[in-house]
Amino acid sequence: MVKSSYNESLIELLDTLTIQLDRYAAIFIFLFGVVGNVLNIFVLSQRTFHSNSCAWIFLTASVVNLVSILSGLITIMIGSWTTNPTNTIGWICKLRAHLVFSTRTMAPWLIVLATIDRWLLSSIDAIRRRKSTLKNAQRWAAVIITLSILLYAQVFYCYEANLTDAPLSCYDKTVICRYLTDLSFVSITVMIPVVLMILFGLLTIINARESQRRVQSLTRGNHVSGTNRSSRATAGSSQRKPTRRTEQSLLRMLLVQVLVLCILTIPLSLDRFYSTLYKDNGSAMLFIIDTVKEHNLFLKTPSINFLHRFSNNASSP
Image (cartoon, rainbow, N blue to C red; front, side, top):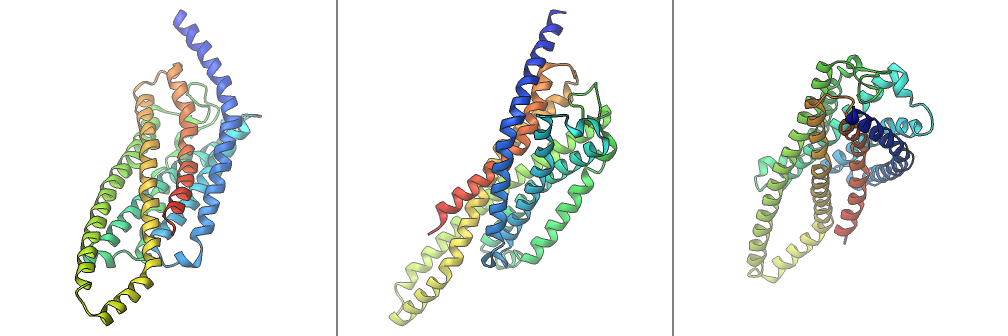
């Protein structure tokens, strides 16, 4: 009895704090994320990046992240001042849940695609390098977007508004739906992409170091060559410098994004495990988890956008 009263008081306090968090933190994340993604879209849409497969993937990921922020945080901010429409209107609840889950799945898998593209391009094997093309990137991006949409199609059945026996008013209406959504999120949206990012990120670093060793050996060989040959090599090298700097900048942006995604998505998978295993919907801990999850789900996007700007500036000449 005492424990139940304590939980009720704690949840009431947390509910008040959540309203304040929705009013101010969500607005900051919204503005920061929207501005960052719009800047990414503006920069990556320039003619310089039109034929670059990795830049095209970053551009697509920025559009996806922008859709996720607009569809997810607007209703949270509205709910801090008045009734959240997703809590009472069924079709808005279903549509928002599907948009948020599907776009949050697209974004990490697009980064996985970018990581694989950098791995292919950095390989010393010419056959692998030829696979890093804009056409292949567009084809696989279309596959990722289509599968992500289909993966969470069950949300249109599972999610329902006006729920009173769930952590949130707009939530899975059955235990089976909840297990299905949580396991899909933990495995396909978080864990598998993170593992693939780390794997291909490390392979890309290994390829980059191998390429540097090959360049250094070729540079030492060029010093032995004649003056005319050396001058022609220098001229060719100077023409390739802008392209090389662009590739290095994109690689740094990619590695930074992989790091941030790993830091900010692993806690999401852990809280999903907790909320799935412990289905005591009246517990204060589960209330805390679902409250924080709503904000952390979008926090990684503006953080990545900031680090994009930082890493891009740091790598520019």
